[in-house]
Figure 1 (tube, rainbow over the protein chains, first blue to last red):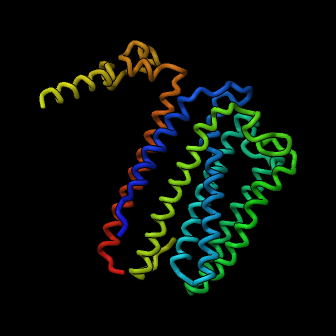
Figure 2: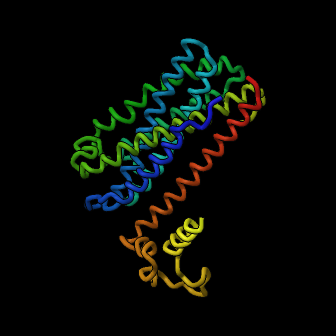
Figure 3: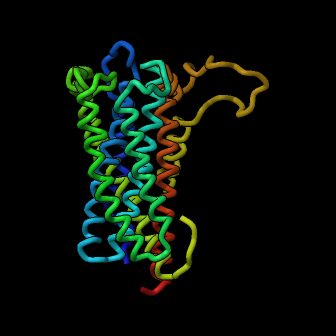
Length: 224
Length: 83
């Protein structure tokens, strides 16, 4: 049986260092942004993590379809749930950040905002679809097929389409991500933060997966 | 052993807030924070950004402690319930 692996302690140390560095690093005082440029270390990794986690969910779903292994279905379900969790964090932090830099909590003029919310809804539908089946095998199969569709929309909704449209959001049309807007030294904290949050997501996915497997073993039906 | 104890006390006295009472009858604002020991002075510097860092670290440590607890509980259950 798995013990608490050493990487979880490393993650604790890693993310603590990232957190401290995120607050202590000297950020350039950019008009409008000011100290909020530190949000780069928290808001953006939410979306990176969500994308990676949904990608992992796609792999698990395809592996389920290839071998009808219920463990793969549990992994895909866990990954999708945690992906949504990180996506919601991304939406909430983005909304708060927008309030103080764009002057609004939400705007329908902003493609990245709305399309990412749409991606969230597509993934919420994954769970609504799952809840419609009582037979675990049938539920797993239909959910896996749906997940393949859901995952293919993500690159378009979050990366391709927003870059073609005029937008305030960095990384969109005529508005570079952090190459010109911010200082290059921010990458020193940003990339470690991305790695740390992905590790954290992997841990939470593993916890949920093990919970699902235990639930299967005891055959106790509880609500999600 | 005594040396270690003395060392711990010395560290504690360096870090401890020297505010006379934990409870006060009125709001005193931030006055006095700059006169505290080195740690309190550092916390009060740079527009209080370290207070935000402290808050974030508290949240992070509480959450991670919960994850470790969950991990332990799952380990126990997995041992108890056979495949």
